Length: 259
Image (cartoon, rainbow, N blue to C red; front, side):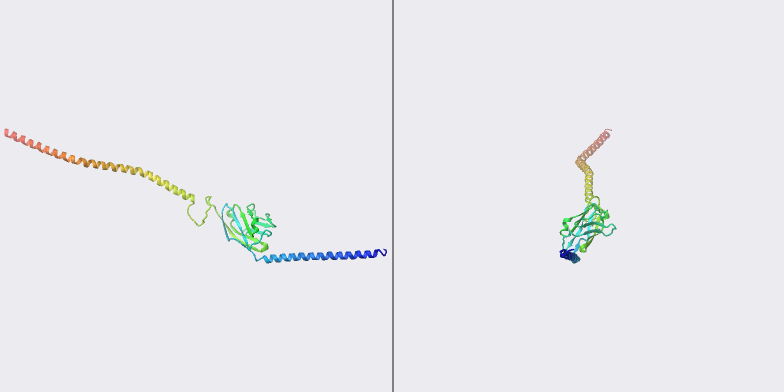
């Protein structure tokens, strides 16, 4: 190795050391930045946790075969699009009703009982509202439910009651007793028909009774008109009988004189 190659070799070693030091410093800074971002996100989440809560009704009622809307609203409102949402059934082992993760519906963990029946309205998530539609509810859907936002540690619980459909009609007031509207109309219709039948049976009887009354009145009037004539005829007959008897007496007297 000659004298000209020594400075060049020294310079190469020094450049290499500087390069390694720079790379190490950049890696260290990158690690610090990642740690700082992770700490900031953690602090943000911890700060939001406890500040928000999900507000939902305590009782939801539905009729068998109809669709029902479940869910709640975040208070204060927050865009829930980037958050994870879990809707669960609290009384079942296979409890997952619907899951939303990474901006989309996540169906694999969903219970087979609700598969193909749930629809989450993504547009409502922007305003902090969770809206889940369940189609064709049945009696087995009755039970306690929960809406949960894990990152915010916010949740709410409510109870779904599914009523049995009676005679294919939905009852608006469950406390009202009495026959359905159709049966009530049929009862009124039957009563009206019975009244019409009774009237049809009574009218001929009334007509016959009226005719009989008229005949009786006519006969009584005729008897009253004939009674004076009968009395007069009786008087004439009595006078004739008296005259005949007197004539017989005269004849008997005349015969006695002759003898």
